[in-house]
Image (cartoon, rainbow, N blue to C red; front, side, top):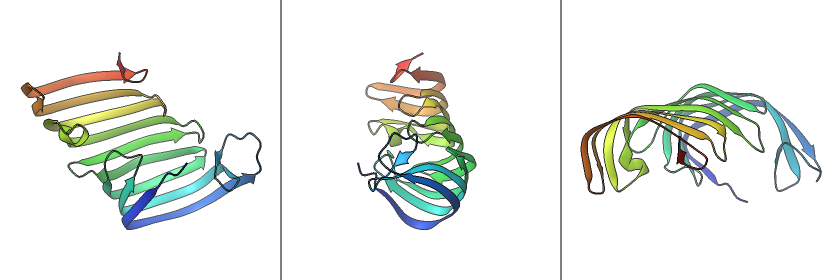
Length: 172
């Protein structure tokens, strides 16, 4: 499986101590194609105005700035600033585990743009998104206050509220 990531500009630096094992037995770590398995990482990774494109990201990121701290199989960020093509965002929280990551993340934007995530829609305003639980199916909680919202035949001056989804998108 290829997980291509491109860093187009900026600086990414790391001061990490990696614990690796080799072999084919079961492992809780992240296995590379060459047989090595990452068991733990300790240290920091710092980004300064980094531009990132990846198949796993819905949009490219630019201006990624901040530091993450790695401790064993947990990665924590107090504050990462970045921008999507239409809005500035901040992220904070942690990802625990390597093989089956568990998310505890909060993303916030003072002016999120709905069209960035759904091209047939419009609307802009403050938005906070919390992701909590297994990365394969996290609970997603959204708190937003969007103005001039359009989606299909619907046109509304303001949409404000909170919503939570889990179980592969089921509203709760």
